[in-house]
Length: 243
Image (cartoon, rainbow, N blue to C red; front, side):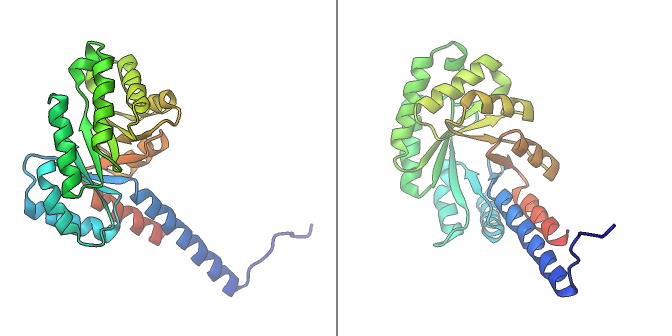
């Protein structure tokens, strides 16, 4: 039988391999844009943030998440042409502050130069079914963020599946751009993805390696938080270059 497969000459084969390498690198960089570095440990200081901002700019990470008090410093560390978004985590981790305090913190973060705000939801109000309070808070946060994207962070470990899905839908209906799912797994992400039906984006947390990141991404997470974000980003790009 005649072999119908076309054989590439050495020059064409080299061009094809280079094309595939470039394609892999582009895909890896697209994945890196989904990685967020959560700098929310109580021991985070200016020296650490300066290093993280430098490394994040180098690998062109998706975002850095910091406490509101660190926004001004990080704006300075990232420079005039930042390659990474800066997000302020407000009322982290349990969202127990009054709405007025959260709104004031959002306005201050916007004034200080943040790109997005990520506000922890009032878990106790959600647990008691006070959806009017939660929806009103989401609307006020969205308004205070002005043109910046507004996120709501939910503690999946404290909420039932029904409460979590309703909270996500309520936030989305109030104009929130993204839901952060704390203490989550791939199955929960998939469930929230189905419940939201594309109304807003999803962030999952705690991916400490490439396998965990790929799993959360596959299950529907648009962004994934990670303590070792820059190292993971570097690994993904080097892996694409080496294949």
